[in-house]
Length: 333
Image (cartoon, rainbow, N blue to C red; front, top):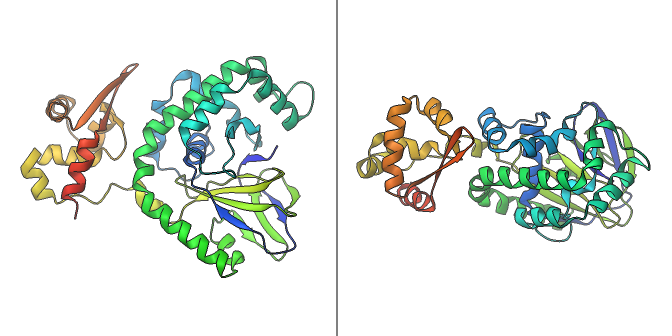
């Protein structure tokens, strides 16, 4: 087992004796895993608080329960079931990852835990998953789905960043500069004469051998790194894509005068604020508008098919529609 959600108190070494073969995988489910680790499991790695709150509020109790083992202090190793479909084969969608988890037999999770932690009873923080494997698989798949529903718009907007990263990795690979490339991935990854040092809570050493290295850019916090070092085919490293911090801020406003003339200034600001789905209370705080006034404007935007409203428990979630996205893009300079 080599899936590790990285921390920062020790170093894991990946050694290689020749220039490694490098490829890149655009697999959004590792962005979702990194956000789960940060927002739900408490391994804070730079995710903005607004997104952290939005993700936490979106995930139901079953999902919170399933990700709890990731929050145990001092432990970074987790079963490979966290990434049911490896990014080394091809770009993997979040839905295919969720489907793979839903189709995983409970016995496979038990076997995975044994391979990760050895035979016998697993560590206390994974014991509930071992006792009720089907329950855990469904809860974790549900958490992935909930987080993806919240962050998918961010991923779509990140396409230019990801395309630039593909080009950057390709140029570095062709020109034979992996040392500079590795050194630019994250402050938690250091390129040395012997290979790579990756910050971790649990020190260790691995030989790359003839395996390739698959780089997986993510939209997680700036200090988030997730790796798998012992797959027999390849090593994969998920790291924050360069420039992702620009996505956390509110998007560049459309031509406000023109949009305001169409829908009104408050509703134009409201549409711009919905950079990701938000609850009514979060939106009211962000807009600094009374709940009664917010409800009125949301009713008008909903009548225009520019937002959707979804009740989850006690909270009502607001999201832009595709029609609204097209409208904003039309007026964006």
